[in-house]
Length: 512
Image 1 (tube, rainbow, N blue to C red):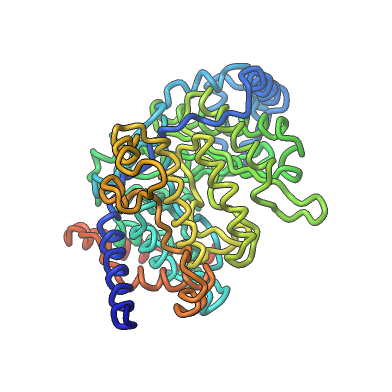
Image 2 (cartoon, rainbow, N blue to C red):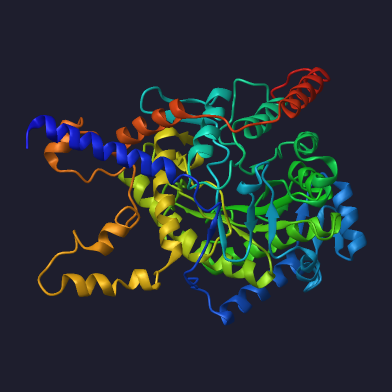
């Protein structure tokens, strides 16, 4: 074959690959697992941890700081309130959360993108919260609103992410007290997937609700979940006024809260898995129950962000076996409480998208799927212990998420998958490359990574000799260059812009 024919063949393969990828983007809006749960915690073990959590809640209690209204809510509900410390009778919180739905729909502005949270479903959402961003061209720097929009676009373009997320990075070029407007607007303008609201102040939570009403309609928002948001406990055993204020705004508006203890075991909880799980259960139940006192039936998710620390340096560690055990045990506790569960992600302490980042992220995202996590934040882009959103790691993680979709399907036992006709056609000593069954199924037979290089050394060298990070660098740039926004009613867009302009004029800029 001549060099011209070889190059033409390669171009033909590339064209077919591109057509296949572009046509395959509209996959299922979320994962519905067909594989069993991996359960490390026995029922007897769960009962021990639940009893310890009950004791913790009744004897030690939880502090709700700087929020007299919340203390009064607890007092009226029958809890023992001593200053800011609240203690709970055995079984009280578990009884309160019975009004919360076991599953619920978060509606997207494109109904085809809506997700069902709970049950056998898994939703992947991107990284949340980093103040820094990084890419191989410009290095590590503070995030901007341009970076924020870029990550929203990358999440929208990925068939493996089901959710637009929330604070995909902090746009530090905007005032702290006003940046939430531009962040929520970016999710609504540049994506039609579900999204998260602001939680950094009660009034910012209310602004998020008002913007959602402009898109979905006031009555629809009151009766349906269109936003989900992250409410962290200040572990150990504290909720602060900021988180409580946002929780109450969203619960009153019938919008979902993820009540999530943020724990680095050894510093913010005991060093043991069992001790940490008892604390996680106590904190999560307290926050989840509060949403039901604000509005019975409001959707709420039992969350757990739990990792460990290095006992030598105190730095957070990820991808550890203890982290897997904590995630898995918390998932079972959430199921026993009758609540959807949030945990996991693509975690790493690495500063660059290297082998450490890949190893740690693979360890945690696989454990996430096998444990039956319903809502997975930080599924793509997490770097440097959550301090950095990485462009390259974002697309590398999305590639890994595609593999999780295939794994969750389990083993296909359809007549076509049994392939008995192929075995009969080929017989002993043959090969299957030309078999009719192979020809029918080769396009979809195996997951095809968009990042991995499986060519020969010579072809890899001819293509530039790029490692995975640089291939990912090329991929995110191609994705942003090809991005086309989803349609948004011009009248709704105008209403959002008008609302933001009016609200921004009502108070001065501030970085508090």
